[in-house]
Image (cartoon, rainbow, N blue to C red; front, side, top):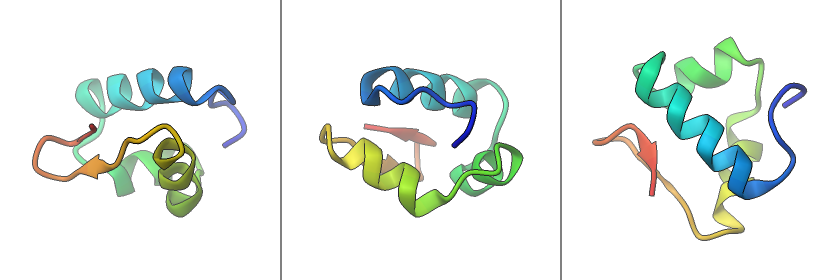
Length: 59
């Protein structure tokens, strides 16, 4: 997660914007950003968000 924000709230914003605008799913996003999916999901879970495949966003 080299180029992604460290702050969880900023990370949420960046990830959801990217998912909405550029990627069809979380796996595609993680592959493009060379990011560990479990680490990303864990960092956003800390602030109460989890990935919703249906809407392709963290809620």
